[in-house]
Image (tube, rainbow, N blue to C red; front, top):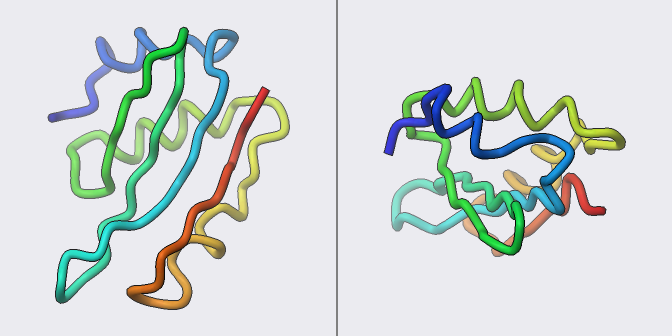
Length: 88
């Protein structure tokens, strides 16, 4: 799924209740993912999706968003990890 402006419009900042980053073990690499909860619905995105950078720019505008989320997710490699970057 591409992360388009139409998708981002369905993620209004005032209605986002959480943004959680984690990684999935893909055998030879880790895939960084993000779950964004809006109105009780969870949207799942991953770093290989077209528009990932646009998603990050969008949710980084949330008040109190943890800009250091990546450190908690990517290291150590292949270990289970989860970082709550935003929660209301």
